[in-house]
Image (cartoon, rainbow, N blue to C red; front, side, top):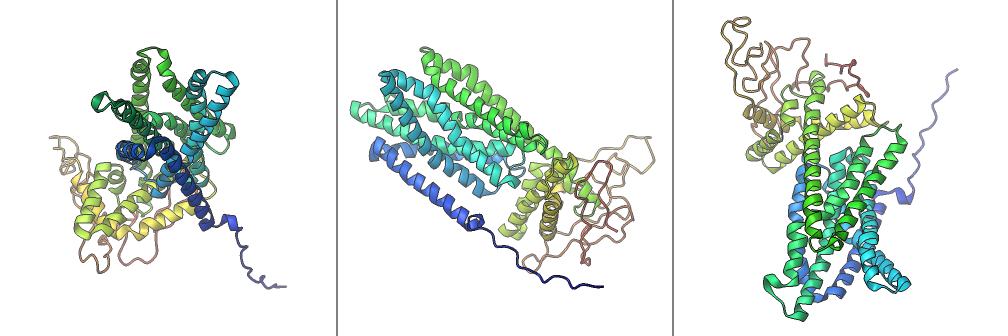
Length: 492
């Protein structure tokens, strides 16, 4: 006996707190109130002139630090709203928490011990590192919990923590430089012998990376936790805590360096801070190169499935080739095309990282949904991105290798030395087999529709056709959790 299907029911409406505009509004209001309060507190301590002088001097290293962290994040750039939140949290919320908590703790210790000098030393070496690093780590924790899709590895942790610490150092430098300027006004000092010049040299010239260096250790802990599988719950909890403790320890050593004698500051700076900065810089750059290698190794599976062109994995694994592709699109089709090419590069990189996590068993339950979203995003931008990537691949291809006389089959080394005849992709290093992929057409008539690349005249059964202009259906979606022995299905 057949039964009628149940009537469709409306999905339950989310709770008011789960709505996006409510959360964004609450967060924006919190940061705005924190900013106004911290502005009033700093201006009260430094005065109007001191505040303006401190603001003008403290802003100098900010663009350089933001540009450095943005450069590290160029392989898979995160959304700007995450960076804006991190900087605002460090400059407003974390700074406000630190000022209130440090002042309260130092005053309480001074009252309890009747030793104001000892209370200041204890507050600088013990209280301040714990409070400040915990306040900055809160931003990394929030991004890790609520923007998990954008937090996938060590580089994401470094960038999130570094931008947060940059905002915190910006506000702290305003306070220190403003107070130094007030001291100079009272004593009448000016020029290189002034307290303002000395403070500027120590905090802005010598150690603009100090706060980012401390908090980056916390970010590395969260980044390694993001790479851990869901089964290692204890490791995922302990790694961020270990990074936070290391950040507190390094911060305490830096603050307490003045207590090590006349040259204690220089000794800590030269023997500890600079080597640690160099080591962490090498680690982040090495991780960045490893991410590019992941792109080069994971994307060929989507080439065989028909989603990407043959040269794209190697093109997308080169930051120089990516930049050439964006410049080519901007020069021939305008800013909108360049933006589409940048989005294509970012989506392809996210797809490579997603497949790597799936192959290693670290993907979440939304793997298939996320993979389909990324493939759809690539498919919708293919007509704009392909000519630019084609140009970048040809421009960055290695020079032809002369054939060895008498080696191999005659005529098989047509300028490449890889055994393939260089026909369709003459400048790639991906020599086309007979009847293989045809080159992508350049921008022709852009702005009145985006023509699809020309389809090859003949496609063998073992190679998927790349984006035929007449095709209305897309390639089959790859498997949800690919394994090394389970290749992606090819297009018929």
